Amino acid sequence: MRYKLHHVALWALYNFVWWSVYEGSVFGIFETLQEPHNIVKYFSYVSFHTLSVYFCVHVLIPRFLEKHRYIPFFGALIATIVVTATLITCNYYIAGAIAGTSPYELFKIVPASPVTIFKNNAFPSCVAAMTLGMSIKLAKNWLLSQKKQQLLEKEKLETELKFLKSQFNPHFLFNTINSIFVLINKNTEMASESLVKFSSLLRYQLYECNTPTIQLSNEIQYIKSFIELESLRQNANFSLKESYPETVSTNVMIAPFILIPFIENAFKHLAEDHQLKKWIQFDLSLQENTLTLFIANSANFQIQTHTLEDASYKGLGLKNVKRRLDLLYPDTYTLVVTENKDRYTVQLSLLLTTQAHVQLQKVTA
Image 1: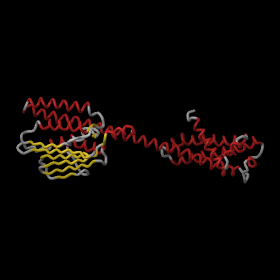
Image 2 (image 1 turned 180 degrees about the vertical axis):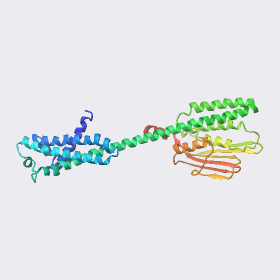
Image 3 (image 1 turned 120 degrees about the vertical axis):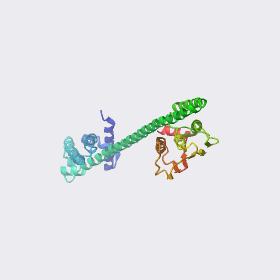
Image 4 (image 1 turned 30 degrees about the vertical axis):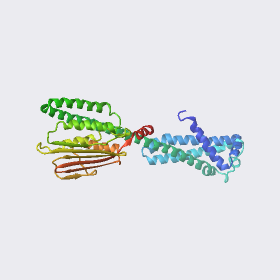
């Protein structure tokens, strides 16, 4: 019962169809099966085909073919076909004995020889049955292998995304705590205000961003608070220009914290000389579902320009966000980073999903 009775029914139907094609009449087969010797002949084909195919599928393929032992596999396969065809040939004589006559006269076999039965009847049917059975098994194995590979790739990507996100959290904490530490000596009241903002940012990060995508409007609000917090530790030589979309549909979704590392990087790369004028220009625009981010900040780098293909980003945050972009938005974003001696620029174009699309992905997953 291990392999279920419906498999036997499948091979019974397979042999019945081929017998009908050979005789040219389905109704004629029903009349033929009323005779005992034809029943014996029919079920010999069904039983021996079933046994040989499942011997190949459940013994030869796992032990030899799947282990790349091709010579033993094909040798055992040919031997199985020959033995099965021989047993079916012998069964012709059993059917003849039941009918009380020669199998050659009974089944009109010319020339009258066991070799004729083997060559013209038993052997071709065994080859066809074995080919069908192996094709079904190998196709099923391939489909299962593809499904398993997709699951492994999905688990790998999910694990990598979780790892990247776990790296981002300490990076964010380190930068923000350092900012508040600077404020403690400069302005106690501003430091207290910063702690309040910091707690609200953490609450958002811990409790509201546990899904793959969130509403863009919520992420923009988080960005505004983040920039405000980072700006508190700057001196009077710092200037900031911000621009955001006037209206954002609640239907537009984005991966959480995908833009924050660029903002962190802008503050980190400000000119270190406190006497120099420091500035950041932040422009975020949305046209249909395409989000465009432009960030420029003062810096003191040597001349160097990066594109998406050859960029060598500095810092953990940008490396992580670059990898997250590759995983979450493959072929739907462009990123160009430009550095020179006094300016650092990031241009990102990102095709966002909608809430309806996200729900469709969940249904089809």
